Length: 328
Ligand SMILES: Cc1cc2nc3c(=O)[nH]c(=O)nc-3n(C[C@H](O)[C@H](O)[C@H](O)COP(=O)(O)OP(=O)(O)OC[C@H]3O[C@@H](n4cnc5c(N)ncnc54)[C@H](O)[C@@H]3O)c2cc1C
Image (cartoon, rainbow, N blue to C red; front, top):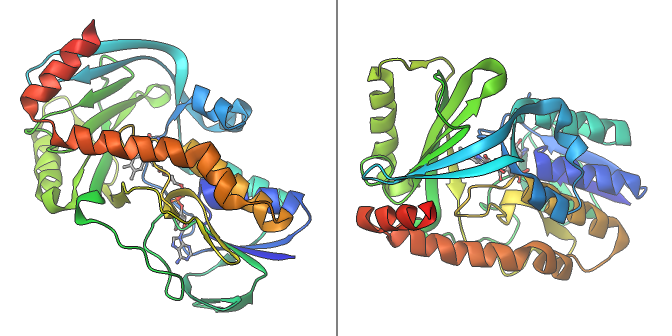
């Protein structure tokens, strides 16, 4: 059985590891070397546990065990949550490198090239053609490769995220900011990187409001006591309803190619890992991936999407009320 996986993020690596374990010949096609995912790196451990993902996988890339999370409303109300280590922050570069190493150890072969299209049982890449019996698409985006069924994306579901690293120590390990003046119809975040006394600062807003992202960065550059250190990274994020079908014939979609980011929380790493692992397993075993995916993740993501549509309709006053309620 030959399994080709496109994308070496958490979903693709988990699919590769699982398919290798079950005896498949696995080729992972990845075009960015080293692959880099722009990400704040927050992981809710109870979710990882629910999907059977071992906490030890995060050990080597652990940056911080989060003690407190604060939510800031537009008028300055703050809701503080003590999470006492049940949320962690990982270094995504290190974490992804760790997973790639595990996939290589399991026997996956990496093909460093861009997948351009899919034609019958062949993936065409910049550097050749690779035959497959099963294909796992883990490209991190619901925009489909040419040759695969197209998916329509509502303009409201396309977001733009920007993030950079700054020298700044926030009061809480994770701070979330709502409000029209900060991130309209989205939110901004500060993730303390305690190990190095740095923070990741970013925001996500609908793509149509992308100019806010630029405004944010300009404001950041002017702030006292904040020194931008890293590059400013930007990424499109699609917070869509889960696709009705997560497989087509011998093609299985995993991770954010479905997508599986949980819209309100932004979280997606463990969801991507869980769906990748299921895709790798079903690619080899012929189990029903659709069903497994919906039972494990689909329903929760669909609920998350509904919650997102409610949250994006809240105005500043609504966020004030929400945060004040959460304070109690
Ligand atoms: C700003 C931001 C902050 C986030 N913060 C968090 C957070 O704190 N916690 C959390 O859990 N999640 C967070 N997420 C979401 C999380 O990053 C994603 O859910 C997760 O990375 C999805 O994993 P994936 O494997 O599906 O896709 P990705 O990690 O995006 O990996 C896809 C891979 O496919 C490769 N690829 C794509 N197209 C091709 C092609 N044609 N040929 C070859 N290779 C290709 C890419 O180079 C990439 O390496 C955040 C996302 C963003 C944008």
